[in-house]
Length: 191
Image 1: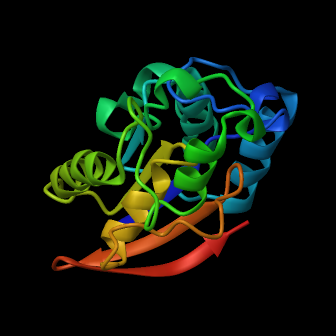
Image 2 (image 1 turned 180 degrees about the horizontal axis):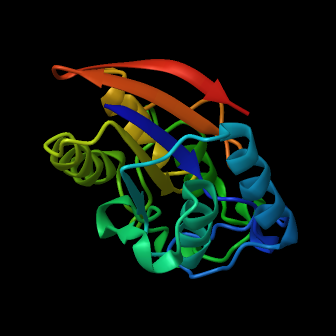
């Protein structure tokens, strides 16, 4: 199976460095153009299934890149963005030392109270990937978010920490993984 894993296209809140979290913020014109360009880059690739977080910015990205209607996108709560608690919709630089330290170096600093932990994100994304791999797909697209994509990548690359935190994934960057007999490897990074 080939898994095309992508972060959603740009939103106005991305431009402002806001912690969107689970707020349902749509793509802006740049985000739509990014997804459209990525689709064109993929050429004639057809996906057996297109999965997405239930948030509109991810669903729209999945629909465009996957070349399917939004109704055909399979949404799954396990790949929704991290819960940022009271920090949601705040500018990243205004969240304070605890949140900035955690979101910069989660391997070292604990999550502030009310913010989803790396362990929690790892558990739900591992469950999603394990279930996905039970299907008989050849090629699948998964559209999610800048925070939650990191433990998914960590799982697929068997990282001891369970995450790949840096570099920060770009909007509509696609990581292509090949999964054979329970082994996964990154075969392409489409930017």
